[in-house]
Length: 512
Image (cartoon, rainbow, N blue to C red; front, side, top):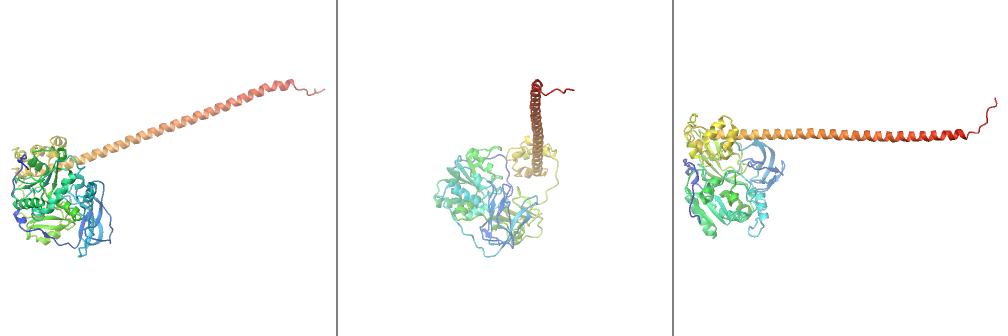
């Protein structure tokens, strides 16, 4: 049992705006005319297509195999026909395209034969392979492959299940815990088994009393004595992994370390739910709960098939007039979608129709007065005002020394800045430039290595050629010398033989 809670440094308390979408139960979203399922579902890996245009597929059928140990599979969200495999916009601020499998649903919703796997009797290796084959990733937005995060099954003492959902407007985890608490608890116990943890702690922000009650009841009914449901104070970003670990355990994980180094592992409630569905029910990850809120007629949480275009979902929810942009994710860490034709992916937890009334345009940026408000709010203990000046001056080496890459881009600094400086944008710019410079240096280093290897190879080949030529010359000279010696010896023999011939000459003398 958790005896006390701890505080993480910094943080803010923005208006939650959760009531707009949390009141109604989860509802299924209708299938679109075409599903666009990207082969890249996150930043951690991709899949390799195993279907071709014209193929008939069933719901839950694997259509993309995991590439590499860190990849996860993707599956058909509905039964139908593969129309094409082409490039379509990604759910990414860059607006770039990625390869996607386009499926036309047939309306029959026919499932592939499911094969449940008993966690109590199956081996750990089989369970991990099933999680990978089911395409399960972190559902909190990071989309890190869950089978990789589970590690080797040792060294973990505490498993944290993250139900904090601290960012404003987002309520998908709240409704999931209210309505499917039993599956979440079942999935949490499976994750505890696979991680080797001794106890489970579920952290839920105290502004979700219904979710806390539902999870507590599910734990009680399951008879699980190794699960603690702990309300945590509402403070953004309490749902950050390292911040939640600090609150619940008192452990402060340094930026250069990961939670498992300290015997703690953390999974989102959505991930626990997906693990339960994959193992107990044999269902691959083909949909997720998405909060649709903001300037819409019917805000709420919807069960959305992966690959559903955002435009289709917004049309179903009824976008109101005056919508100026569409946000993917929350207002603090989300981004503006360049195209609403981008599809819902495994990491799409929220879609917000923004209007000037709900999200007023930011006032003009003012000069930094070094007031220190950003430093007080930073949950990582950075000095954002220093990073701002260094990023703006393009002094990237100094920015790195000021721990730029420790920044989690939570947006707390920009939220409290009296100068309305978009600090996170500057930090993202600096990070991207440093990464680009690093890639250039890496390419230059590789080119230099290749050049030096070529020079060394040419020198080696030249030396080897010279050595072969010298050996050949020596061999020829030796042959010539041996031949000359033989000729000399033969001449000497002939010279020796000539006097003897003269002495033995008895031919008659000419009388004349």
